[in-house]
Image 1: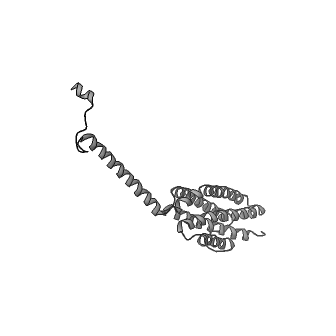
Image 2 (image 1 turned 135 degrees about the vertical axis):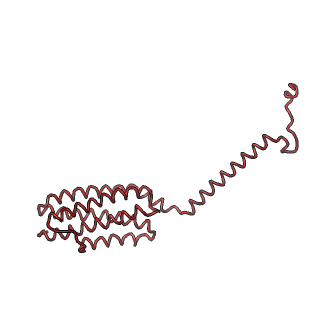
Image 3 (image 1 turned 90 degrees about the vertical axis):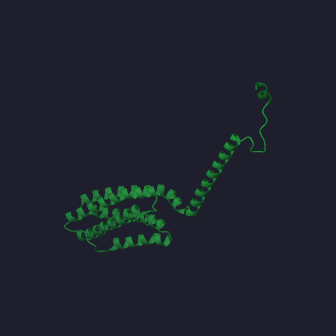
Length: 207
């Protein structure tokens, strides 16, 4: 890293990367089949990612530049990460989770590089911004790694199996109600089995 111009190009891509991730996280928050815990965490990190983009835009402005849609090495790398999930899983829900996790790792690598460049050029505010972003991205990765088994297990549960279990529970409940009804009828109708139930001897003596 020899020039401020190179740093600005990297910073522009870092901004574009955060905006792309913000859109991907927002998609998870509105998808009806997204796991509830993931939907809630995605909403939280979507706001955090929006703050990351704003902080990077501020750093660009301090360097005399603006955000740009220009795509260089880092932006091209984002395309690679988005293709990983598609190659691994056909299910859209699984693919979205994989893309988020892979992109978070990619972001950590890019911001680590950006931080090193900023430190070399004496851009201390950008260094602090990268440190904050890295901390929050690593927190998201830890959350995903911790909850991923449960999330995937939920997605892999066939809908038919869930429906079958619900039907079985309903049938069991119906059988239980029938048994209760038969017991009540037996208690109220002593001729149910063809004749009155004989009274015990001591009952006859008392009468």
